[in-house]
Image (cartoon, rainbow, N blue to C red; front, side, top):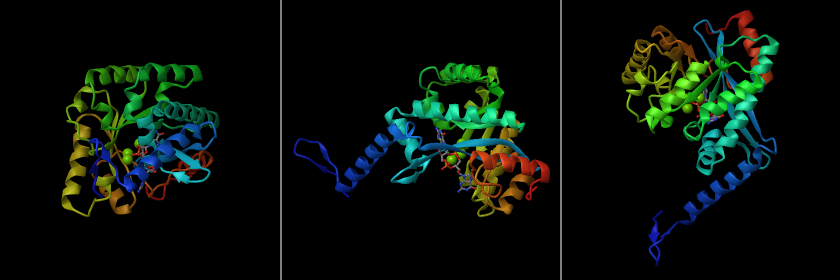
Amino acid sequence: QVKERGRDGYLLYSAEMEEVAQHSLFIQSELRGAIAEKQLSLVYQPIVDCRGLVVCVEALLRWNHPQMGNIPPSTFIPLAEGSGLIEELGEWVLLEACAFINTLQETGVLLDAVAINVSARQFNQGEFAEDLLKVLHRLGIKPNAIELELTEYALLTNLDVVKQAMDKLRQAGISIAIDDFGTGYSSLSYLQSLPLSRLKLDASFVSKIDVNESSNAIVKAIIDMAHGLNLNVVAEGVETQTQYEFLLQHGCDSFQGYLFSRPLKQADIVNYIESVAVNGHAMA
Ligand code: C2E
Ligand code: MG
Ligand code: MG
Ligand code: MG
């Protein structure tokens, strides 16, 4: 639909655009109450090594709205970023994930880390690193129990400032992964200068394994490049045995996707971790 110039030179939006904007505003205002109304929860998806053992779990945010049902994070996270709600949301995620880490420790479940997604805006706001370390200290959580997942959008700002924050986190023991790797627009030179632990190969490459030769080439090249830089590679969105075998054969370090498990509620992920530790995994 066409945007028309109004009499005073303002843009007149079509009814459809107006509806989308209204809907976004509505979701934003509902999100404000979501924490207090206990509509948020975390689910956890296992990341497994080449033996099928769970090395890490990624915390993923869920919002169950009483009228609208489940609203996906791909819808509400960008709105939270745009409205300044992301700090509050991020803080809730952190506290909830820390409570889970304590539960894991009490249950005797051993993992390398729990991975937490941090949005670009959240990471670059104020004193993110200091605040995070303070919270962990207050809760008695060892920083090495945490891995942060950042997308390349977080790096599209003053890299010196980003590096300072990352160095602080890394020195404290927190690991940092680049999420959705390969989809960003930043230059690769940051890979040399930032204290990263791993790259998460974006699901869009994984889904095209064995569909076209060029995707296979990109996957191989990313794995080799990462290893050359001493970084681990996690493949995201692994759904088929074919994808898994290709990745395994080319040296990918760990795997995440529906082939192994969907994101699970807290009690279910604990059962999953324990059962693969005892029985081994069907895929391994
Ligand atoms: P992400 O961090 O890249 O997370 C992976 C997404 O892929 C998750 O979607 C997960 O459920 C989905 N997934 C995992 N395995 C498969 C598979 O085999 N096939 C397919 N088709 N999908 C798979 P989800 O949970 O909807 O989250 C979407 C995005 O929202 C996340 O992408 C992340 O960027 C963001 N997000 C989720 N939770 C949080 C959070 O707590 N904080 C922030 N800042 N962002 C979050
Ligand atoms: Mg992630
Ligand atoms: Mg990702
Ligand atoms: Mg993604």
